Each structure stands twice: as structure tokens, then as C-alpha cells.
Amino acid sequence: MWWRALVMSFLIGATTVVAAPVTLEIATQPGLQITAPQEWLQRLAAAEITQVRIRTAEPGDAPQVENIGDEAQGDGAQPVLRAVGILTARNELLLPGRKFSINQTAALRDYLDGLAADGESSIEAATGRFGLTEAHFRAAFDALSPKLDVVTKNQSCDNIVNTIADRLPLPLVIDAASARRLSATPDLASELKTLTLGAALVITLHQADLQLVPEKLRGADPQLRVVASNREQDHWPIGYKPEVSPREAAPVLFEFFNIEIADHTVGQVLAALEPRLKLPFVWDTPAFNAKGKNPQATKVKIARTKTYYKRAIDRVMAQARGSAELRVDEAGTPFLWLTTTPTR
Image (cartoon, rainbow, N blue to C red; front, side):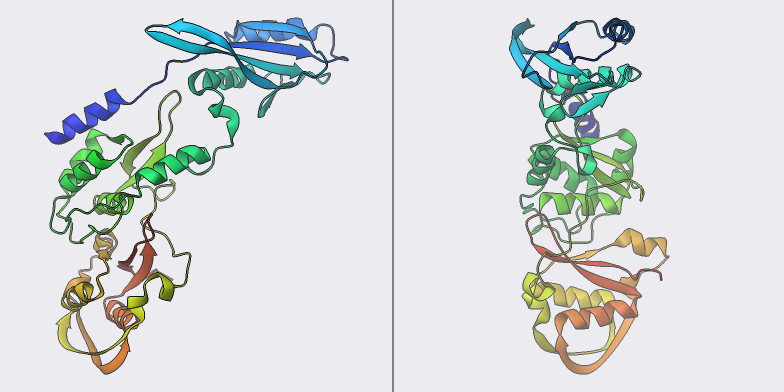
């Protein structure tokens, strides 16, 4: 089964960086209690932080991390890093981006482990969304931004995800339970070929009640993980609100036309409009299923009138107790997200 190969290759084959050796140098400021250095050494030793040197601070000393050379590591060499900390008169250890008390040696050990695994990048910038630095978030966004350009309508969800995984420059990690759920999901009803890899991936995963979460594990390159849907967990979104006005984002939706609907279903009407507009119509099937509804089978009626496409679609969806939200993918390509009307 292709999923087994996919899961194993990503779980085993993720790139891991060999940890660099790190030494800790502590410069003590005037006014520090005379017993403090010995107390710190004892606490550090208990936390298994042993490569430590304590000295008197000199003019110009400041918290920093520096590369002091290379050390042989297997077939290559790894930099040896020195973290220089300032131990203040208040008995606080200042290191780049952090401050530690003598009771926080476990946190200090974690800080040094992160430095060993990821180098100075572990402390260069505060983490933002998904716990990623700006550079790592940009890597994920860029990986998900190319156009899919593959037919998805009436294709199996697991094959779609497999195709996307082959095109991603970052690993896509899927556990066995998520793989089984994806394989059991009905074929995708929407055509996503004009959308980005990211939009197509999260829409397909959503059909199986799954979400996408970028992550950066210590000592490894960024990767994309598939997880079970959880409203409380931050996850990659299904499109974004356009940064420009709806009329600028999708001008075709505001073109006028004549319409009259007497005895057709929502599915029939939207199937006729989608190719005319050349705009993806994406059904939020799980949301309708959760309410026990089949909106596409709902009969709709609109008296003959002249209106613009977006207003007509809104009226059609309203009769199925749904809505049509204009969203854009990572590349700014617009699509309509056909979902249930929010409960008030």
C-alpha cells in the first residue's frame, strides 16, 4: 500500500542535524556574592551541564554565541559553539534572548540543547505562528504556494494527497490512523487544479476531518504534519480573506447577467455557473454532513431578474441554508468556499 511507504519514508527519512558541541562561559559582574559561582557550578553539574567556565567579567563582555572552531563528527565536522553569559550582581544569568535564575538550570539545559541542535537560529528570532521563526514559516508558505495543475474532481483523496506530497519540497508526515481515514473518504467532488498545493492539500484533508500543521522539530528541517481536526489547534487555513476588495479579487463575480430558476437543484445551478465563471466552487462537505444536509439536492427558485453572479450564488446558497465565501489561496487565486450558514 502506497501509504505505508509514504509514512515510513517521511518518518525515517526526515533530515536530522548532528548536534554541535556547546560550551558555556559565565562572566561574573562586580557585586555578586562570593559563594554564587560555586553554587552555580553545583547546580549546573546536577543538570548535566559540565562544559562550563566561570571567570570575572571584562570590559565589553556581553551575552553572545560564537563559533570557536570545528570538531570532527563522523564523516564531517561540526562547529564548536561557545555561549557567553553574564552573571549579574542580582545572581541572574543573561544569555542571548533569555535570562535564567539559579533555580532554572533545567530550562538552561534545554536552551543549550536547542543551541546545539539548531545553532544560533534557535535564538535569533522569537517564534510566531505554529512556533516557527519567520524564516521557517516562509519556507512552509513557499512550499505550499506552487499551482497544483492536476485534475482532482472525482479523484480519490488519498491519491490527491499522494500527488501533492510528491511535489512538496518539505516532508509530509502522515501517521497510520490519518492514512486510513483518508483512504476511507469518498472521492473529492471539487476541481482544485487551478489552486495552490497548499489550498488543494488542506481542502482534501478537510474532507477526511484532518488538518495540516507545519512544525520544526529540534535538530531537524521544517516539515508538514497531518493531524486529526481539532478546533483548539492552530492549523493551516483553507484559503484567506482577500487583501483587496471582493470586486478586485474576483471581478467576474460582479458581472451582471439574466437569471431565472424554476425547477433546478442547487447542485445543477452551481454546476452550470462554475465553468462560466472559471472560478473553483469548493464544497465544505463535512460541514453539511455534520448538519445532516445534502445542499446540492435542494430545489431552488429565483424569479427572472438581472443581477450579478455573486448575488445570485448567495441567493441560491441561502435556500440551502448555506453561504458562499470568497477566499484566495497562497498565490492569491480566488475561489468560492461553499459552506453552511454560521449558527447565530
